Length: 122
Image (cartoon, rainbow, N blue to C red; front, side, top):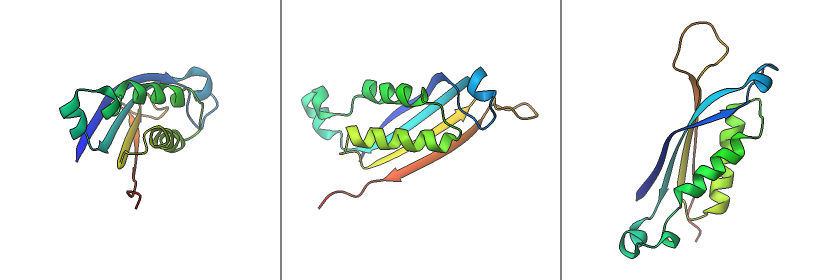
């Protein structure tokens, strides 16, 4: 199995349960791990034989623009969109970190992680 990663994609967005979070916004770091077979691309050197991480990045930015209360909801939408566009992906893991959550104390951020495996079609 082969993997593709997008790491710490920094996106400004407006998610949160508190109304002010939907107005003020903050930076989020999005990490994606994809499992798929990349051996054909390793031999062909053809973009059509791989998963374009530029396309994955575009999906991240598009879905992060849609305001949601819960990061879990955003992550679920991202996973669905990625698998819809690239059904040959076997597994997707996404972590979204809100870099400045409205809570007491200093912290690097608050994160959620969602992962989903897809059974190969028989």
